[in-house]
Image 1 (cartoon, helix red, strand yellow):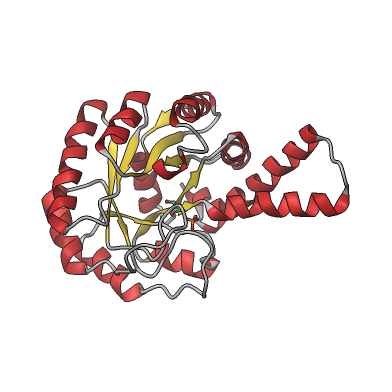
Image 2: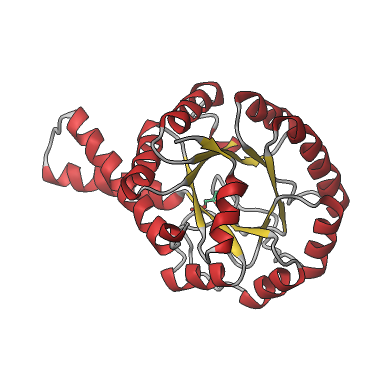
Length: 281
Ligand code: 13P
């Protein structure tokens, strides 16, 4: 079908009481799995890469592959930059044709986060691209390292941030974290509800989707989350397949084994798409 903007898919989802999964790309297996899942279920989807992934998946190699996969897909696909930390990388993503960019200023003081988000919105405007920002601090960063400390998003700050920036999508911290959860996630639904009620229609994003229960995902969507990021669950599927295969056969053939890995990751993506009720979109 077509390369689309993530907010177009998110708005459709919001109107129909569904969420949208955004799936992390870090190699060819994850890219094929994400696209195949969307095509198999005949659903639109979002693929994304985070700046922290560039050392193992160089952006100049992976970005053109993501763009080409989206343009050749049988369904609508949005291509998103996840956790852009510098304006240079945001510009690079826009130049590559990404239809949305995230600027992660969550570790900056409030005013600096606002100022940089506004700069990114100016940069995105000529490209017609959407912008995601982040407010509050998740316990763990996208690459698994610890942050200075978990800080839930404060509803009054969210309201002010949105008034000042009018950003397309806002990622919030409500007890969610990147990577494998060390303890059962204890999501602060009162904070989510308040932010949603005070900013009706605003697209809110939940990072750290791996390890959250299906019931909590649905509760998040019912209370205003429109996009949910998933990465670690896909990596876990690869590691599990590698582990299981090693027990089954001493020297498996690479190519059939690679297809098994793609299939395992595709299964994880399809599971999340179903839990997010994406068939309603
Ligand atoms: P997980 O790795 O916990 O799924 O989080 C993904 C994410 O939020 C990427 O931005």
